[in-house]
Length: 78
Image 1 (cartoon, rainbow, N blue to C red):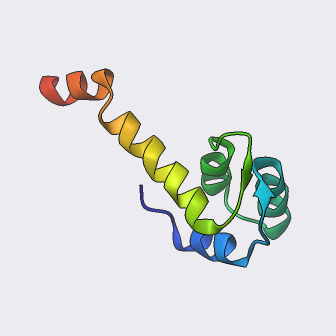
Image 2 (cartoon, rainbow, N blue to C red):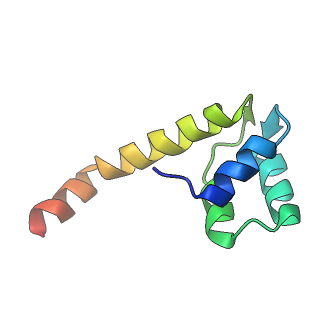
């Protein structure tokens, strides 16, 4: 998963530790786009220690979706 430049800037500027709710509240206050806020909303409800921790969870989720049986079936049908 590639984050947008706006999301990268936002994550670099956040104070950590931060919960998912903290991230969403600050993202709305900073005017982060709705697509980027939707990505943050998919994070698990926990505390994150740094921006890399968030990127790790986002990448892990993207890989799980990419290699899920439904995704494999869709690729095979294409």
